[in-house]
Length: 275
Ligand SMILES: CC(C)(COP(=O)(O)OP(=O)(O)OC[C@H]1O[C@@H](n2cnc3c(N)ncnc32)[C@H](O)[C@@H]1OP(=O)(O)O)[C@@H](O)C(=O)NCCC(=O)NCCSC(=O)C[C@H](O)C(=O)O
Ligand SMILES: [Mg+2]
Image (cartoon, rainbow, N blue to C red; front, side, top):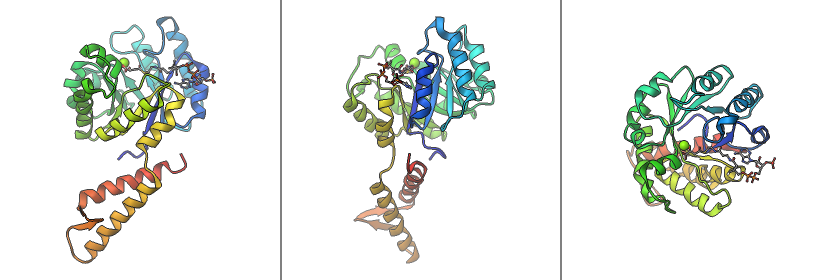
């Protein structure tokens, strides 16, 4: 369980000051100011200036910066900006090996994007790097690199999505699901959020204001779910008080891991109340 909820993480193009201002008024659990693919080469420098200004302002949530990756002409300036201007973390695209993640863990939490076949294969080693806070799936780049074709239930990507969750969870890191490109398809978005949550992701990266509340709902906890978690814990406490090692709740076995899960649910509920 994360100390902070990360149900929705909003990408905002670094060269769009109006969108950056708007993001400050929205309710994602974190924001990524993007200097990479959302910004055309001729706008990179202006974007860096907008991002620096944005980081100087007050934000209600953590603000990460996605920098251009290794080999790009902007990589050093972008990293210097993220390090000096107050970003809460650095999002690094197309991370393919642990060495890169290690070398670029420069004092800021590193969020490694897994979006190439080599990145997926090396995801466990990348997640194991101490400075890595989490793994983000980049499904557009990954689909292109794998030569898969679009599929409504993401069947061609399922092995990679699960590999990212497995790697992150094995090392206590946070897995965040990929963006959903069609910002005018709420049903498809909700379906993909449910799938991502079922697969074990902590939250979803999003690209449009309209995707924030549905992601928060899909990855959040309802009052009924919180009540259910409390009831399960009460059943466990009663059983333990009677000296029993296991309990049942509504006919189903309850053991310590179910209680741990219920406590995670309550922590998320507490952390997102009113948000
Ligand atoms: C996807 C968009 C290009 C759609 O833009 P548009 O049609 O202009 O949206 P709207 O007119 O509906 O916008 C309404 C208002 O909302 C603001 N807005 C839009 N998007 C954002 C945002 N992301 N953050 C904050 N505010 C936003 C607009 O400014 C309008 O405001 P106002 O004028 O005041 O009413 C557009 O949504 C967009 O650019 N989204 C972000 C794209 C992005 O960041 N892409 C990069 C990350 S995803 C990626 O790289 C994939 C990954 O690497 C992979 O490989 O998969
Ligand atoms: Mg990408």
